Length: 466
Image 1 (cartoon, rainbow, N blue to C red):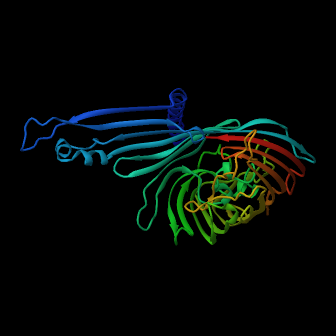
Image 2: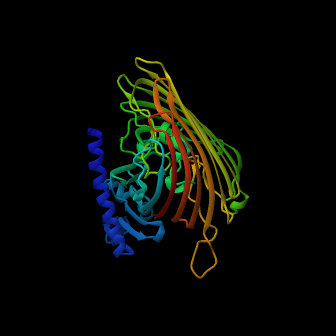
Image 3: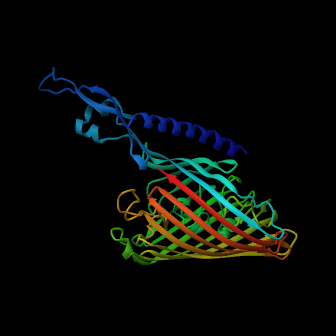
């Protein structure tokens, strides 16, 4: 509770700062300020030589349209003695940026609507319209002794305030790579590692929602290797806020989580995406341990407006392990992706149990675009249409057709969490890189628990970010 309280107070202050910056940017497109300090230098030739004026503190704020608000502060005199200042030439003083802060501020808005139907014993399937996500996002770097990257994303998800990311990242360190510290997504599950803004579907596949960890407090190390064709990441994590969007609902666990990836086929062509050819392979592992803890796995039917339909309830267990495998193949506009997860638990006062799930999906860009791959994070990035949609001008944006089949089994032994199979179809329309409309339709069935029946889902989303 202490950590959660501190996090909320800190993030609320940051949210207020983000709002102030956005309001400032709306009324001032470009603002600049400089504070100057006269630095006197003496020479043996003349005691009356005029003082040299140097910029010491400078700042800039610029609104960049869809790219958000950029703000930069530079202080060249911080932590410097008078003798150091007098011994430096003007050129050295200008180049020496002892303290620097640079950040980009943006936001994301997503609105969902769904028509839901269910049969059998499935309850609480209510159609409706909901604000799916409203976030303020800040990312950038600050430099004191060394440059440190940071990201903060906070906002609203249905019914609750949510901290999505709040972390710092160090510069590259020999042998260990970059150190990441704070609250973020652990390195497990390609669908969860990829930003919700860049997923093929409105929600991650049900097996990952149930079995993979959600955002948690932790520290991790890792970096790309072999000319950025492979990555490795290893981290130690504690439980995150249980009001998170996805991930298992286990309590009082510590986790060691690792992920390794390999770009087996590496023919990426950013200038001509139609020629992209790539094959991503990855494995991950999550070992959980605690002296007093409970595990809980559950999932919605890949619609956030729908309720949880499979749920193990709380299982008393001190140890557990989850293994994952992932693959993604891209050939120009065609993309195929799949993942498998298997979780085993040592149950107190009962037999061990095993749960698992998998999904496979595919998509095709009608106008020839291709999914962009991030070599550093080993996941997928924003889709950029070859021609943005515009009234009265050529260009239709980027229409994408997709389909996904997923299966999750949370019933084993005495645990009757249920089995869920879902077939989902999707049409996405990227009007431009920052605006996307999505339409999904799906059929699912659940059994093996008190929830037994069929479900029908028709849902849509309009998403905007800057």
